[in-house]
Length: 614
Ligand code: AGP
Image (cartoon, rainbow, N blue to C red; front, side, top):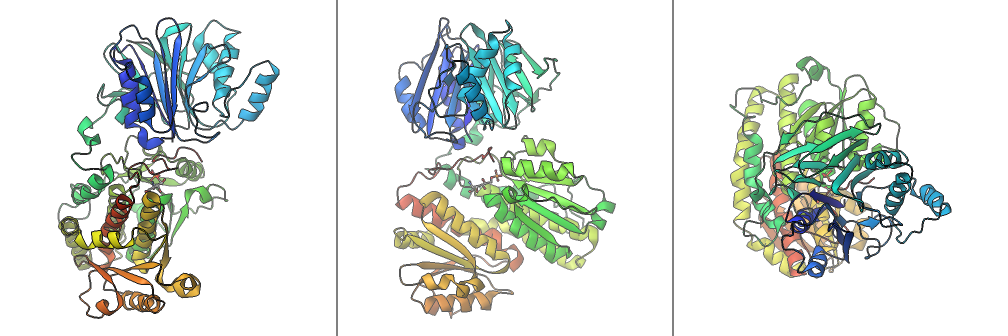
């Protein structure tokens, strides 16, 4: 949610700011802006809408200019105030002494604004951020020290912030600060950087420092100091980022989403690598720090997550209950945090998050941890705040996911749950060894089966041609594929803005069936197994209401043709693993429909990939 960048000491400063924002566009894209010190004054450029508008405004400014000093940039996902040029960041203080960019929400901004107005400060935007600029300027009236002014102002703020700050009268210094919103410092040669996330700085340096909450960085071209809010200097570790810049390119695909869909076979292979060494040997999950004794006693699991990660968690619940027979509760993190946290002695909390920065999930796992729970985090970002705060970590190795709609990270989360459920079953002896070996063999078959789906997309494309103008879509499934129906519907909603809803197939007759007629397509996910016949009956009920019917299935069943107008075939697998395969056609269907509708697939309206506000 909002991306910030900053730089000092680099001769291509404006280029860094713009290219850095480009890499952070997944965090928000309703307006953008930069500010830099040209040696005499702070210049600010802002534009409403996509980053391209700011780029056009800056045409001519992008060439190298070694006279430029510190600079900051921002790409916005609006929380307070409409996305227009006035509300775009950077914001400048009343006497033009302080320019700032901010990610987060200042919860007490109204009280602070009132106090500042009483002191004579005038506000020009509707944002919560503007109070920070005025507050720092106000604090500067009582001290010559810029860092003291920063610390004094920050102590008054309640809420979340990642900040980049430059001062008119101190052009050689860039300040950064963090509380409950991610921020890193990139350490370069004679130049230093700040950013909300690694992709922004990867082409300039691989050395990073992860700021922690309540820390301030005072950064110059070839030095930096990090301190706490009392001014005590802190020793921070410089870490090396293991990724290459190429990880963040489209590699010839039109959209990141399509590239990421096609990366899924390799993501599955990567997830299994080194964990599944031999069918007869137990799985190797060294990242799980719970002792075997604790795992044996485990009698309850709570999983917390949001959005697509929540759908992966629902599959995880099904697997763990099926394999181990202990109760698993799943909850949207945003609901979990406003309820009494009930934790028993032998329970485990699992947080699932692609980004590892989602504010709701982060707050939820902190809450559970404060009650004494062991927190295991499943995340795609081992460098994220959640990963750093977790007691155990199950990294999912999907690589950078740029498209706002999650695809490969979801598949990788599912794989993490398969591994964890089998791992627990081995420790708790809850499944026969032969069954476990069968499952392990099937896991290894999955990448080729996903490849088969990806190499035969014609049927899916035909469905997209037929249905891209529909305004409503229904997805049904049962059992372990019910979350797949929810995820398929979410994908379609996110990138095509079509009203798509997933239902447990058996629930249709309890209400939603009233909507059905020939204008609403119903997509059934049905694979041979426990609930196949039931989903088939529910599909017949929909067909009887004239709905257009689509099946995603691995069944060789002649009856299907009499019910379904379109049959999307997937390879056969054990029902328990089918979500890995049934998900792929739904991702592709959503993609093609959005493409036919001409939507902005990688950056759908109103969304942001990393939701760092509650
Ligand atoms: C997925 O397509 C969505 N963009 C969204 O639902 C996402 O899954 C959710 O915001 C949670 O994000 P996280 O996995 O990074 O915590």
